[in-house]
Image: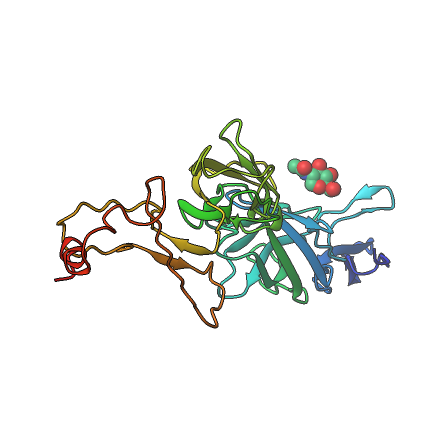
Length: 335
Ligand SMILES: *[C@@H]1O[C@H](CO)[C@@H](O)[C@H](O)[C@H]1NC(C)=O
């Protein structure tokens, strides 16, 4: 990923050759060669990482994988491995609210692991952005001269688990139909789901669980009748419906739907009888005490009423017509 120049690893410091001369003019030339490790380079990491963590777990899968490189780090060189203090010792996560930490898995290779410090709940927070930085181990065993990388940006998305099941906005719904009519939608039921992802929070399907009903429900919760209904046959239906989220999780509680069948409305006078019995001596009697005009919610411009009375027996006229006018009126309660 970056060119290794082979120079950054060690410096050969030549401590000046000096002569040890004995009295016998035997000269020994000593050349001391000391290898000094120098921490010259900062560790290197990518500038951006994308991460994915499934809620309620703690390991973040990173793309690209978290690896810090250090030119000072030991690499195979000229056929053998050099030993150095400068490898990757730590990763730090910067961001006060980021509930993550990064650990070094292998100091030599610089591989790291990002993990959650506490429970990750998708319903509370769906993504996190923070910085991460790599630290090398410094030039000396004590850790002096530690160099750190630039800060890389990490975006972590929280993967959803289908923890919640759909819940209906109401446990009971009611609607009504006119008899003899087929509706596209009598009423709509609705369920919601608290999961954080579209897949697990959206309602994909509704179902009527009561068997053999003349109703159907669509995926939006609209209930329609599949045939025309008769008030006299059954004036009221009670059906159960359930809902499924797009992860196929079913509602724990069904909703109850009441559908009332209304009789067809016929405009006209209602609440009266054609036949009125009247016994002589009863006094005055109201003919239609409970009569009302059903307009079927239509507007009425004027009302004209004509009442025609006929006697119920065969033959013409009143059977008391032979009575005098005065006694007729008395018999009919007029006096
Ligand atoms: C650490 O990484 C180095 C270099 O990739 C590898 O040779 C070594 O086996 C790794 N150590 C462990 C414990 O995996």
